[in-house]
Length: 400
Ligand code: DOR
Image (cartoon, rainbow, N blue to C red; front, side):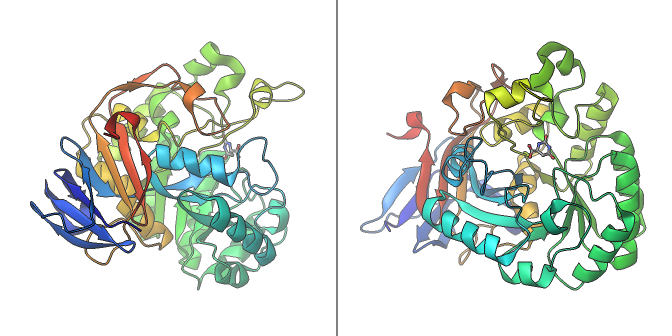
């Protein structure tokens, strides 16, 4: 592995409260030195980050990689190539696969596939209930021992309150949080926050999309409930008006809401209520999105637009908070390494620039080409993505 010196960039490291012109030296998969004007050592590759921002690698804590079971939608190879092009050095993948990620043997097989094909780090989220059927809680200690970083039936809500309460009790002593998919949103958020408060279980609300859900979350936090939450780029940007324009292609769970909700979400990013940006990357085939032979498949490919889309949605957000929402805080919520670029930290780095670009899904590495951001010009662009000290992606215009 060639040692790397990232030179001339503006380093933004929330974990160290650092925002200054700083070089970063990477060797053997870790950060070895951070400081102004470092001299290149013999044998080191120098990567110029002049005019760009250098951040701890971005982590998307909510993606669907569709493995095992749905290679026509996405594979570990295509989904993680989409991730590195989008600036992500790590993703957490959801368990609505076939079979579901509900058993250590399934996690072991997935880990082998990740080891062979992944272009970035992949952390599995295991199911809360067997088969994601909402009836029988999984064996959480066994799944945690097999690498699960969280538990979720994402894609579906655990409808039976008794099952959710029992699951929370069984998982309460594990560090892995529950990630809740809440539909109908406000009543399930209220129910889950009550259970989280009783069980003192770390709870993360996925893809928050309404003002009412945010109000309940703030109130629960004020009571000391250990709850975090995320927001997607599409809920921060679009409203149900898009469905009138795009029809089936705008289908997503939870659905796009009203302008009042959208504004509440943007405000919640600014005021710190939101803990993480997460794309809910949900690729489907074109016929599935159009609903041939059934209802339209919900969701959009998000990894390759997320960084630009968040910048467009909350343009006045300080860049330190932008990086924290994409890196430091998702790492903390999932209890994984990353989110910091100090000596000894993993050599996972995202380099990005204030540079406008236009979304063309035909260029996506993801197999899913549906995005409501198609044709939009976004203000922030990923320049390079470094995973474990290796350049996994470099924008063509930055390759020189
Ligand atoms: O729109 C969505 N698509 N929301 C989800 O929660 C699941 C996801 C999927 O897996 O397609």
